[in-house]
Image: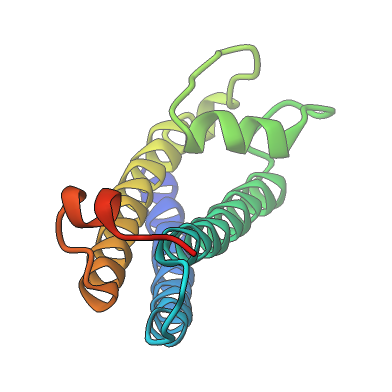
Length: 152
């Protein structure tokens, strides 16, 4: 059981590193795009938010791939199992249960889910901060200014 925990923590640490790197990239992209002045602030805001969410989505996909690769290396599921699907189900905490880990790696499901929950929460915080900073820069600090601002 200790080896499961140690390997799971190592994979989680790798994924946290990936997410930290992507956080820096997402914030720098949002910051540089957000500093531009726009005649259409609503579209500008939408573009920044879509770009930030897309970058974070790519990060989550890479993180799931790291789990799937680890599942493959340690043979965490029965031969012939769809490990990418299994990793996605665990990472997103869906927990379908149609693929189950082999007994010696049964902690991998909860460890993957714990990692996914942490990183999804982190992504939500990033998106909120990007939104907040972009709204501040565009002078749209409240909903009424966004609604009442003239659009060309």
